[in-house]
Length: 482
Length: 147
Image (cartoon, rainbow over all chains, first blue to last red; front, side):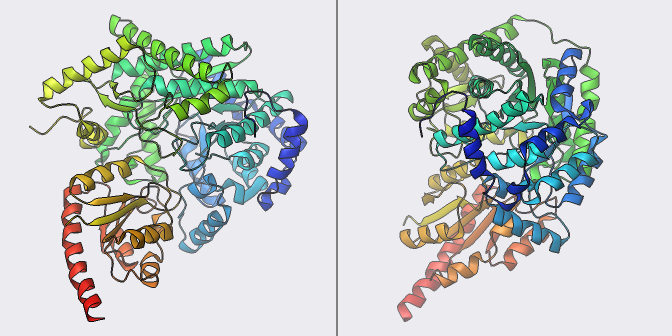
């Protein structure tokens, strides 16, 4: 397999498609022309890209939960229960389907029927198949996105897009590095080129499907520049295959200035890199994920984390916000808890709607810092790929130039170690092989040293662990006990 | 002496953060930690435990499928000759917010010796490991000597 960032030729795509559709029996029901016709039948207000575009023009921040259960009727009831509290709907896919273990998903479905409650952590769309996906889409009145974590999401894309879902999360990096252990990047990037090519094919037939690289990655103290680089690369890969509606994402770190700077710089950088690659006919939007790390068990405290994320999402100008629930510390939430998270978020979004976060030297400094960091990493990725971003990405992960903290994938170096500074911004404690400019590294070191002095201890792995647990224990920074 | 323990995240679960922290904590507590990482099958834990003569297996699960993934783990250990090996499980083990004591009953019913929630103090887990391994060594070695 010769990976390159080049639009897949239609005959090659169609030949591969024939094989993809045989990987589980439900694949045989998928006909492309029928999928296009079905998508055409959806009204504007159920088309994800159109709703995002409108929000972007109006300067609004839309809210979206995560939600998915094993059985179709229960899933419909869940989405119907949520849709009055949110702007955009998800269907979160279960973990077996994400690994293409459809036989295990089938067992999960059977056991859930027996138990009378969902024993799967999401909606097994492939097992349920095309007609059942359409039943979900028809039962709700908001656009629905597929949210998952699937390294090989080709069959899932075929079934859900023909089934009327109008947005598809993921990418060859962001759905491999944080979600898989032994899948090669060549493989996952190639399989996601297929998904993007499929979306591109819909686009050629007048159907705009929104694509969203998964921003937060491991969700654990990821420095903004690293997730930005991945989002931009996945955007470039998607554009090449014909995708035209792209939502780049970022996971909240909790420091207000860094978070607002992150969304501002993400949008500017994505626009800059997409145009530099010769594209100008894309719709670019942003998504802000409320805190993706550990949550407090106490629900009142959890609401505080949720609302803080909602406030920053609104003031940063993100097009949508992915909402957490007060059950986060304990796993999959009930519908009621999910609605509560959405209501808390909507309240604060409304309250910050007309407020603009004031320009300041501190904000401008963070924006500039992130831009310099991203450019340093991106230029090395292009260099390693001799101009080809797909090849460059594979080599960059091999070399540790791209490196995601706390990710499970074997192809990720795991040498980059982040820690918070004395104000809670995420900084680089150990850079590994990530090629940041010398003065930037010095700045990170100095900021961490300032915290270390304030705490009277040396920076160490323990400090990182303290930061990982801090929010669940009611602080942002993991200070030692007094 | 330094005891060997096997840790990992079971099933199709890819949550790596807690796993990396557990490795660090148990290593600093003096254990020889065999960390299988994420997405570990029941047999992979058992293979590793047999290979390294481990004194305990610690299963983690965060994503809610633990209730399915852990079924039969104790029997599988026994079948493969790991009679009575201390078997711990911890994390967010089920779907939905259920009372921890009910979750504990389910997993103890499956043959796990210790069941921990996501907010357990890891020092407590270390203490339990020392206790249970001491008992296992005493009984297990006694059985071996008698055989």
